[in-house]
Image 1 (tube, helix red, strand yellow):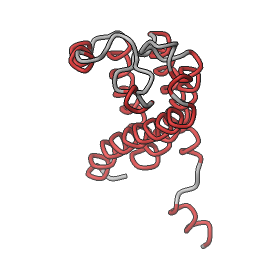
Image 2: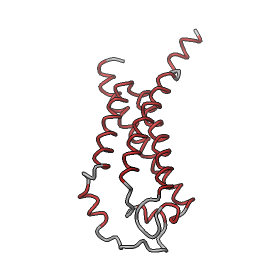
Image 3: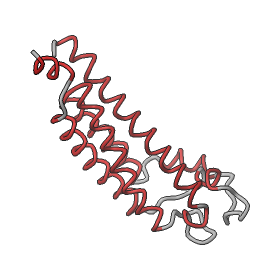
Image 4: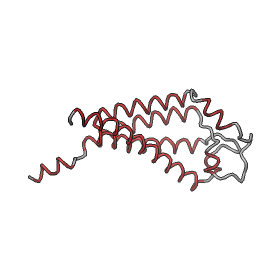
Length: 167
């Protein structure tokens, strides 16, 4: 990879890897919430995510991060994976430590005390709260998933390698 190519491919790998992760997490969580229903996703009539939902979330984060790590290494090489881990780790740590609290306060200001029974799962998701252990677990599962996805992506044959093998 040339110097100019690396300057473009490394940030592109990070960006696309992160977008793949976000899209996979959003799609998977939306599917789980719609298919399983609100009662499965929350503890009683509270806004706190249930333990079962959090455990499924760990698997969702691991798979999504696998896809993100695979994407990052295929586009930008191992430097993209390193920066993807840094970006994901920083955002995940800030979220898990509650340092993005002002945004959370604004999001929750109009939320009723108890979760209404007629509220759908996707609407409830906007006002939900995640237990701290789940946020730290998602961070760990994500970092491991990125590393495993990158390891698999590194070993996968590239198009240029296939062309050389045919010669």
